Length: 322
Image (cartoon, rainbow, N blue to C red):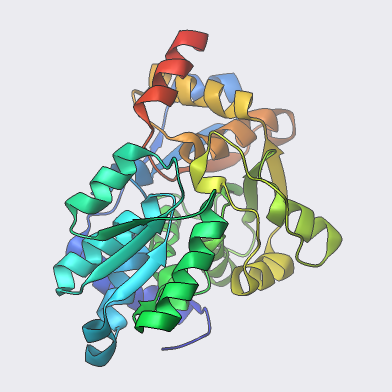
């Protein structure tokens, strides 16, 4: 498989993704735009069949695997959305699939992955420990290891939503993208650099899981001791080499948002747009609203990366803000 992320790879991935998925909506909500003081457009990746953008990457990866690799089966680690992507794509292509999650992972995401037919493994206190367990098992058992970010076919697949953004809203001023492992933001960077170089790409991390933000500031990869955030899609302690290299060279800015800001944004998106966002899915809007004074009059996109919120978190959000 190729080890380089390119616009040609994103364009090629679209042929595969379009066979399985419809484009997701890019929608402006007038009340939100008025409150923000700029033209705000939400990219509804939460409307995909798995409830998140990651499905695009899984479909493209499995489509490009050799028959020999498919026969080995695939193994990966996840907090949920990446795992659903790989599980769904594996079912479509008839590939055996093992997925590791950390202890205490969102039970609804676990159930969704098992519903697509994966064999679930519970290991480690967080995503990064689950990932290390997968790497250990892969060496013992020989499956095809799918890294959640250091895999160009995943980035090419998820980059297809950036093509849709640029077609629906040519040359936006800013795109805010949630930033966990980095596949989503790297897909957007790749498309924007080629097709709309005047557009700024801003990554959004949780204040409680700022490994890539800290690494970007320092100019070298920094590992944090914890990643305890309500946004499980952003809960990584360790940057990944391929995506961090792209981020370090090409991203325009990275900002952080608090768990309170994320939770309030979940509520405001539900209240004003009737869309359900998980923590990571609300982070881009939270950042755009936080930075609104510097964005007056701009055309801004916030990526709602997923809607797979745990029922307990949604109940807490409604209790606090409704």
